[in-house]
Image (cartoon, rainbow, N blue to C red; front, side, top):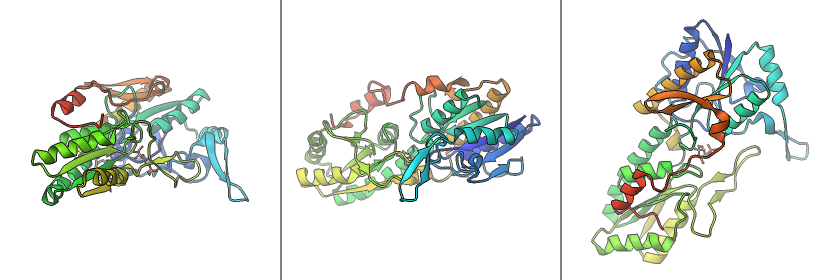
Length: 359
Ligand code: F6P
């Protein structure tokens, strides 16, 4: 048996732990393991294919990033190609990828990625490639699994930042608005905001009214709490408005969302007269060592993925359905997008604790 591993999309803490567990589990069965560098670039002749041995994965379980490197621009079905006039044209290079995999004697591919990589995996599976997936993303927006690895680390990074912002906000009687990642899902904002006692949490699942946000700031001020902490998910947007986007995406890349925190801080300052500041936590949330929770989950996913390959569960993704890791069809996973449930107990507890959601 010869398998190949690919890490695609944005990196997430725990990728190396998945690679380590998968390589050790596969080699202990006597299988050959290859690493496809930078998403699928390695299988398109645009980057390397490397052997992965027990030696290659020594001492990497606690490290952030991915030893295979990654990209969110390498979709083989929509591969961006630079034209002589400087524009880009997308071409389908999936046939070439399948041929290269066959030439290298690759029996199955383990794709470690979020919804983008999983949908590429599903399309390759439909073309006859033997695929098993592992759900990765700090956004936690993959259906069918209680959580993805990387999410816990991102939430902890956000909590640490919020704890630090609390002391400076309080010292200066300021409002501080912190923007966290999550694309169209509010999980990082909700979980970090509740755990770090934010005063306002704004998520894409609840369009906000800026006056309601200001009411909360005024209410606290009136009660002698002269500072406020607002956590906003990058994809949050006002009632009747749209998410804030950054116009700097490269060809083949999804539109980047972000920039909402600055706008909200300015609006709060204008409307309440309270001095306000903002920051974007950004890629700090994707970096560094995985938490113990993420490390263990990633190791479990890696080991379970090799079992799924052994059981020939092609087109399946490993998922946490506590207390077990199961394998579920990728097609089912892609049929819906996971978002914050508005009646979830975390939401109820947040509201009961006085946290405002701008609604
Ligand atoms: O999906 C993970 C994520 O970090 C999102 O939360 C964020 O919107 C996006 O990736 C950022 O992508 P990039 O690394 O291209 O800036």
